Image (cartoon, rainbow over all chains, first blue to last red; front, top):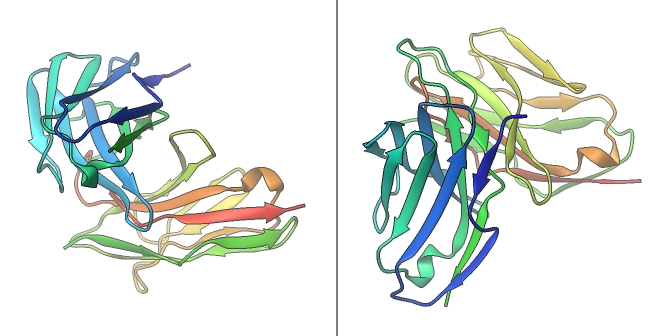
Length: 116
Length: 111
């Protein structure tokens, strides 16, 4: 059974703290993604990675960074958490391809982060 | 640019009712189109997809047809069940590997 796991389901942090969200996939996927989900806004892409140590900014990268040291693990880092980063964070992964065909993204259960 | 617009929620129906959730899109080129579903407490799952005009995606009794002339990909099901209660997201893929999502529609089915 394919699986994407996220380190925490719920997290509460204080303004200014450094926050790490971790995601692990067991499907040997090349691509990994971080999204945030907010009511009325759907999912918005923060960053994605198409290979180890490779990353590309998504639509809303400000205030975030990422790290991918191993193929199966993709970390999202909030250098200095702020209240407007309170949200649901979803990780996803998919196979890479050199062509233009789409590959299904598999999602983790999400981490609900509250910044006080 | 690329964008997806879904009908406003929440939507509440009785069991065995007919369901339509509207989705329209704006895109350059010829994107692939998708419906994802998020059950309570879970991540998103791919429900169905269509990769070119006039394609019909289907799964679990749900259907959607890629209509290029109306830039639409409406989700339909003939008879909904309580277990269909979830949040549904329409999405498009403007280029390989990336997705652009609509805002989501929360569906509640009452017995």
